[in-house]
Length: 309
Image (cartoon, rainbow, N blue to C red; front, top):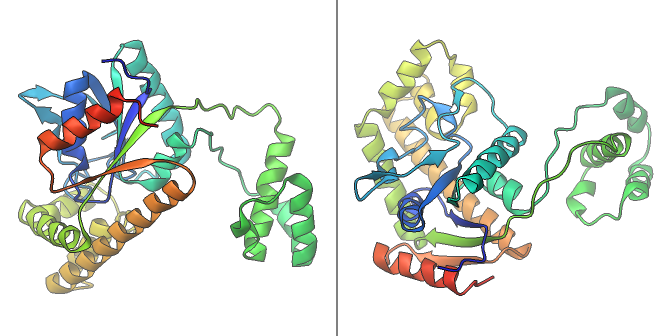
């Protein structure tokens, strides 16, 4: 097969079936999967992050995957570290002459790779902030405009955002030798989604299944390993509400209802993020989650072969 793409990306909201499709395509393309999930990087956080590791076995073959289980629970992994780790894995896969399949639902991680620019952590500059606090909002905007033409209007939504934008631009201006190279990766983007009602039903069914499989015990085990409730709550969703239940703040029924609602809202935010990616020029070819695996793989192969940018 003559493929002009550097990578295949399969994305979608939680409980949408993207992992099983990614694994099947990886099997067909003799590739390796790179995860784009901000919570599946943590070891021991399996049911709560929905790792679904059984999906990585296709036709009895273990599909190679990367950037899952790479840091300990309790560590606060970030998108800057992710970009570095992604580039290392991506380069290794290329050297092995395998095809990279990028899969996940964490919008920030997907953007960090697909937009083709490197994010650099900009430290706080307290001295500069103190100097800027005495200036009017109009003066701050004028200073920001001296660095660049303002395309992102959210930079000027509030004084705090304007000051932070100036802080970032000042850092870049004073760090001319900074390594901000990130390769432009030409990827075919495939989205998998269900209609709203089906998505909500699948989320609720999946939540019940994971609770039956021992998600509460998983949270207790993590806490017993020395991770404080406050640190677990930091990871949000399942870990937030189940931790609150375990330490006695809410009942099981309260936990279930609040968590179920939170996951529904999270999936909605994911879809909003993906629509934002499309508005910014990234073409996503959407597949109906209800179509068979055979139909999905045939559609993806057709898009790959025809180089549908």
